[in-house]
Image (spheres, rainbow, N blue to C red):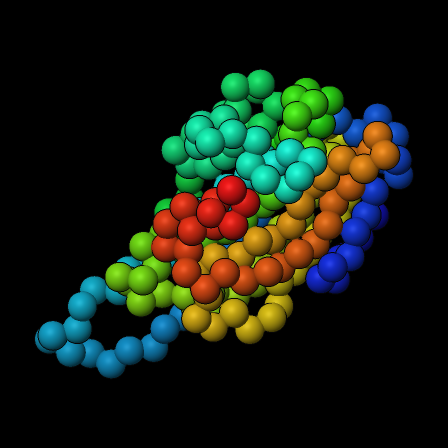
Length: 202
């Protein structure tokens, strides 16, 4: 039975789910329908392109490398060199039901120098497109036992994120030999480019 998490809540993934190895992390969102009047001079409406990424951090909470390919898995770097973290690909619109982007983590294969996996979502080119998370609804992160096809937990992000263009959604981290998950939901004001979030962990 899946657990609905609140902001700040933590759960143990491996201790309470014996044999858990492959975790599917699903992130989803819907665009709020924007009403606009007809005008010959109206610019065509642009889809909101949300990008999910995972930042790989050490025990000190900092990125494990200065090289992006070694410390970030995202649409431009779909698989970590270890093979432990795999991004299933970019969704440019967020249309449709269920997960919009998915990332698979093989917990047993995560290199020892990686102590924390930080899952983030940012709106690509948010500033020039005048877009923000106040224009997004039904955002969530969920974790599934990929082998058993069983949802473990879900965190619905229901706060007002007007003016924010990035979100630190949640973390999978090591503690006392086990893997745990923490629901975060921390907004970031300027994240039109992923670098703005990466700088918080450098």
